Image: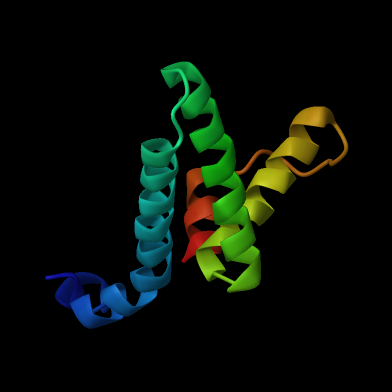
Length: 102
């Protein structure tokens, strides 16, 4: 279906999405096991899971050089600079975002 309209086959989509999907799966497993083995109060476990899951994604994104991670990182830092007034770059539109990610 997508091959017909945008010349992007299912196989190409699966190949492009595999690294980020694998990272999401491994991160979810890591955070789940962390919560399973740590016996603390639920709010503390949640905070630990959020922090460790975020650090895990950043570490894996940098270590394995995941393209989508770098795109989101670039957009995030650009937006932060714009919001703080350090950049004269206009806010990012959705079209620009999709261009950077794809």
